[in-house]
Length: 331
Image 1 (cartoon, rainbow, N blue to C red):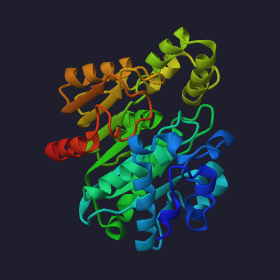
Image 2: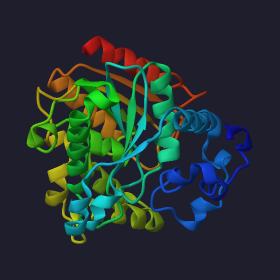
Image 3: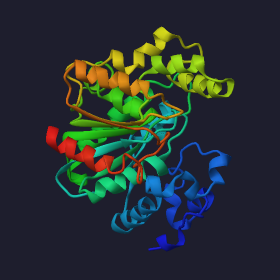
Image 4: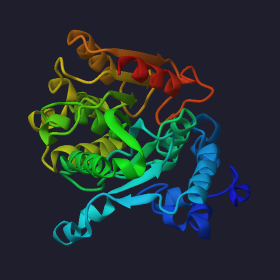
């Protein structure tokens, strides 16, 4: 194992250009920009997010498995829709014959922060005996939706077709999502736009980390933001509602309007000082979960910002283990 050559001072460029990690080089951060390329692993919250243990787990999985990354769509579909080539599943195996967790990293629907919100989550789930599949869904386009939802459906159909190979059970699977990936996971939990629209098993639980569930709330926050913050928010909303987005159009994917009594059990974590996704969205979701009497557990903390991932050493330390316990209880 060559993991010993990786440290907090290793840059993302150095990590991605390690020969033995070449298959992962596009999947530490997707649509990587120069500012990401030059930063150190330690700059992304190594201890808080558990980055080095996650990278160590990648080496272990490579040693144990001949294939780790899978195409979700068959290659013949790439000719018709070239962006489907982006869509992958990264298999991080746990114990056999258990339900699994589909992990959706965030990144504002512009990219995916897989190193922060993918591998560390999967590594912890593996330690608890559960297989994890990190979904690399389509990003980086205006008027993107519903493509990531379609990718979620295609990924789950792929897993269902290959459940014997992966030694997993579909019944009771969970979906974990963070930030924009939390929005995707939350949409997947709806009958109207998610699992019900694609005739796929309902998730046994959702784990939502600082999810941008309310596009309407995000629009309100954008209107109050500074010019620099507004520019980033506009780009995010364009990916959901198109270049000429409206409040009415954004409401189509605002999760609070899509929920009902059939919504899956939900575990929700957020920080009150999150500068990217206003915690008011999570308060709104909590109200809806109560209103529809959906089993749920909520953990908020005063200080933690955005993209805290596992939240090691914060007020939410251990939240993922608690979420798994909740999942086991409700299923």
